[in-house]
Length: 119
Image (cartoon, rainbow, N blue to C red; front, side, top):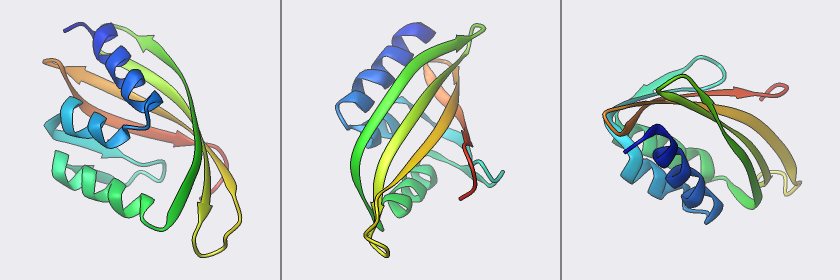
């Protein structure tokens, strides 16, 4: 598959709200995920678990994504806007971030997030 077809599949699944399907089907077994604070998580199952933990204490009210934006032969970026309501506060907030994805051998091997403001 080409970088463009992987990015298209990524976008299609995210636009359907199937973000975890992206992780299960497009991520390499040895993926490395880097959060905006620099913390790294390695391995597909560990990255999925990290994401499950992140979504567990909030409701997701809306997601808007833009892209993909390409860089060279093996990277694409996606701009995310999430409207979420943390269960602890009940107050909706907007989270904006950019995800940069590196592809090798038809799988996403690295994701790195950059976010606006502080978290």
